[in-house]
Image (cartoon, rainbow, N blue to C red; front, side, top):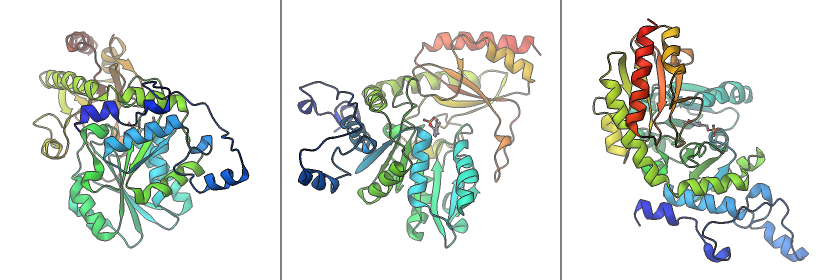
Length: 388
Ligand SMILES: *Cc1c(COP(=O)(O)O)cnc(C)c1O
């Protein structure tokens, strides 16, 4: 089955819902049983049946089934946010006394989880250069239990040689987890490249409309129960409404992503031609340092990239950003709309020095007509120069 068809059909069971095309939003905590015998019997099937709201409703399970099918995974565990998915994946394989390796380009709250939460429980974290590849072998210790990847990296957009890292991890018996939010399961399938746990902040492209918080972890059958139990102990159950929105978003993901990629490529090339721009960080660009790996492993690009401006002061950047009509200034991304966000990786990078010529901006390119976005930014650059 081709991807577009799978996106439309995965996890759908109209026959279970009076023929309704989409599963209803089941509002349920208690699931009542007819007898002691049935109650006892159901307790043996907590991972497969509908037993209690925290373990998931039929809506939750439809979302999980669809995501697992798209990831090429055996199972998926839906949780209440992308951050909850990172936490559930990490905590399902890490215990006190362990050592973990985290890419220096990781989503910043994952670093905070390591520093503020894992460290007091006796888990030591070493950050590594995202470009390390097979060199990761030198950092693995006897107690290393997890290598955490993210490609392209949050904000700085470095690609990683994922198969090189997972090959070493497999050989050394170390688990791997990846934050696959940028690519979604449509553009990169981590499990096919040897990754054990694939995380998606479904809040972004899967939901796709900037109106729900949702996360999901996908895995082979072997790691499912541990992840599910971990998420459950953390109380991290998504609402059925959110899972419904995740499923509904998923149905149009293939066409949305194609348009995000087309628009983002147009904008990225346009930025490259601007005198106010020093560099564009986007692996889909042929001159990006991560382009070869991206082309080898990924089947497309989403609409998120970063731009390093030529030196400009805060007032100039504010003149550019504040007057934009079509770019909202806000966290998150992956919705249908364009966004812009200033960032400064020098604040948190620890093992790879980050040197940027000027201020950095992250752009999410939405589904607007790119001509309008370019006109908006042209006016923005006029304001930036006038403020200089
Ligand atoms: C947004 C984001 C998350 C967290 O998702 P939430 O749903 O906001 O908790 C995790 N990883 C990446 C790469 C993200 O961009």
